[in-house]
Image (tube, rainbow, N blue to C red; front, top):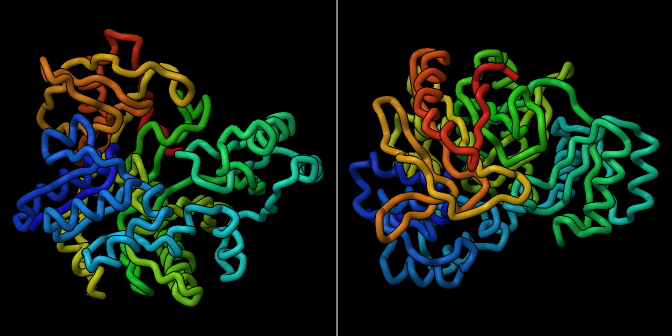
Length: 419
């Protein structure tokens, strides 16, 4: 079986690693891939949103299955384009991917189908947005309506921060079209968690919960990032909250999307928070989340391609999970999530027992084969052990090689503090 993975980040690297475990998969291609993926798959120089080129490649190579990693090609309709040519592809249609592509749509949808979430208002006028902020007070959350690579959310602890955020989005155009409309939400208190599910129509098959660390620095300080690390399972997450999330959030979403004529197939990601009233939705993503996928998929015992075939055929994939703790810590370029240098040489990344390295923003030199940085989040170092403490010990021993340089940084408390 020949499989194409669309994307070139950490999420796609762990998907490739998982596919390599399958006895049924003979050839793996990644478009565009990255330095680490190139060690395990054939990288193709096609951008992840170059839809016509991707379709043509899949046809030419007689690809059996295509798995879409990132959100941008999904919201641009890559799945529709593949299906139009009778190519097998796993991911939601453009009509369904709007659940991530527009926060305004997602909030209105949740309100209509009585799915628990924070109260909100949507604005395009900066003065009206500011008046609402002054009326509600802080803390308050400001979100760019569209896709902003995980950076379009400001959790403002003061009114001044909130007012500056709406100016950045609506006046200064910080996020381009993605921020031309803002969603302003009440601030919810509680512990966050992520729950992915394989979905086909009204069939929902949940995975193991995970928790990521979004702030750049230790003790959850610093700016919001795309995620500095994650762990799974989440030992302090009440089991009744997981079942409530599946029954009262994920299943109603699948059913509601079908009723809206936006039938959902693919991975649905729920970003959730445990409040005093129970779990509520912070956001939905229309694909595997990053970096949580790097700790969830390593725990999956099933053959991933078999799961995808079963789910797409309306069959229960009978998900099975390893009995262990997976933790992953992200190494980021100095300055991330702000400005940072690229093409910085990485230390030796030779892996050790019980360690896995997932490349996100890396490239490889043609002459000496050494790796260099190409992005803000460079890679993730993970381990599965029988206790969180053992996994942390393994990871932080390995990460010492990055302590000889100030070109990169990583949090030293991933998985330590149950947020």
